[in-house]
Amino acid sequence: MSFTDVAGVVGRSPAAVRQLASRARQHVDGGRPSVPAHPSPSRRILVTAFAAACAGGDLEGLVTLLDPDVEWRADGGGKVTATRQTGHGAGEVARWLLGIHCGTRRPWSGWPPSTAGPGLVVRDGGGVLTVVSFTIDRGRITALDVIRNPDKLAALRELAD
Image (cartoon, rainbow, N blue to C red; front, side, top):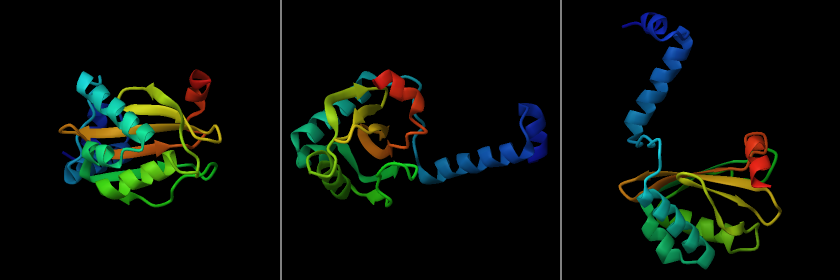
């Protein structure tokens, strides 16, 4: 079917349908799992174990929770400090996480953090609200998306205060 035909069926513009199809192809090509609507107990256990490993500075424990090909992405929106590069691999990402949390850069506070589905809500040492969202597949964390952009977190800021 053409994008125009699909657009008429789903009530969206052809451009929006093209964008949805493009994103769907990227997800399939990237092998990224779809996120379940409700986090399972095992997902909460994994996130809790992640928080404990970070808080305890447990590099080995953190590496075992991360997929060997895990990716780290961050978004500060140009308004707060966030890494500009993407991290890859369990060892690199684990060392990066421990450097942020346990180092002097701006360690996360409020441990244990609030768990929200497959993610964490924390504040850094400067009080900046941070949301860490996890993509989990086969019992390991395959991606971490760190959102620090205050514009994107405006609604959460009221809940977190």
